[in-house]
Image (cartoon, rainbow, N blue to C red; front, side):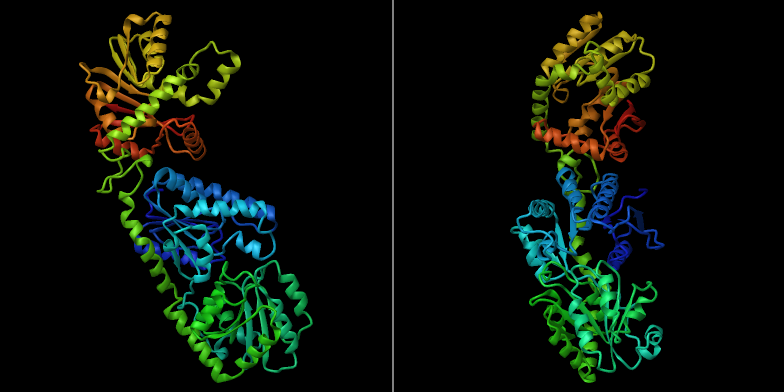
Length: 637
């Protein structure tokens, strides 16, 4: 990305939830630069909002859903790993495991993230009877939920009961849960008299009480009660039922409604028709299957209220849907399966005075509590403190930031104790693994092992070639190799015409191997190796070239290290730095964590440029490696 975003929003299926597009647009207007990774383009022209298109969600089968989720997750990971850790990640849990990216970024880089939960899984599957409470998938999923939400700065959800259910995944963290409903754009959706409504006129709804269900015909939507009530009320003139939508239950709905003279079934309407189809409803039906209350809240509720429709809720009490209806006195809620109650509610809505009162209350609540303007402001208020502190709170392991907001990758300057501990861990590691590391370069390992090293250790050999290319003519030149290991660079330098090479390393085992290699090749007189800590050693002379290959991987304060390298270099400073990579980086961090091998650090080009500037190196180049994600930095002393 040309400019680093302040917030990155992640959600796969944006067309099905308009609020995500609206939130992205409005945050971009407030914050200046926002990126959204989703599966469709909203055709929004905005210099402050960058829309990145990812794989589309496919709901044809369980396998297709999982596959499309996985493809999107991988794409989102690539996007996130291409950014600095200063961006706030705003992650909608769709796919349900998407917040795991936030967890990883926070764990490794201290990057802040928030999670938005529309539907709570696996609880919805358990309550729907799809999976049992003790099913291994449920138990694993719940464990993952606790892990994903553990480090989230905020967890947004749609209602108080949903917040209570989420609380089981955030022990002691209820204060991090923020209830904000998905909203309606009350400017684009507003009441339209039926006489002036082309949709109502086209479908013959003028002069009738229209009871409408509009939205997804899914597994969690209780439609049987509506259909049975419509069947009972066929003989009541002036009442018409409309079901608009698509989804897994559509075929069943079409079949059931085929014999009903008072019921019309229509497909989902185009976006430009929706404001008219919604406002055709005098009464909007919003349904939930029993058991789904507390794990889901139908977003259609707020669009119906914006349209000025009375609500007829079908949900088991208590529910967030029932709470909205009762709090704002905008309709009636009945239990799922209570056909008598549903019929009585429709009859009550025939009372014009009562209907008008409910409709006015619904519209008023939409404007004051459930509008786009009001709730985007609530979201902004919740995340704004995270944005203002983001620059100063990144963890040292990710490459920390100074209090003035400059990224320096060094932890704070008072981290000497931590750096010494890191050096001790690295020293101990290479004391144990000196021979294994040296074996990478040796040619006496057999054909298979040599091939494996050349195949899977390509960056090690590429950085060697780049370093010698950048040093150029070696005759009469001197070299200081910091972290010299088994002496491969020093021996190669002298063997290629260099006058003298000095190598220093934290590991005495490595120094022993380096001396042996120099002796074997016959250049021991021109090579000198010493077991010392570079930062704690006062060097008496300068060298033409000062290199550190495979060293900056382990430095919490690379600026101080690079600054000292510059102070003892006459011509060039050359270092290798590992770059960010989703797979390589993740595996390496995991391997180092399990093996207690110390911290490991990664860089991008911007990090390297700022590091060079702080170290006082103004003329340099950064060479991307072709066999990996790393870089070779070449600075003029």
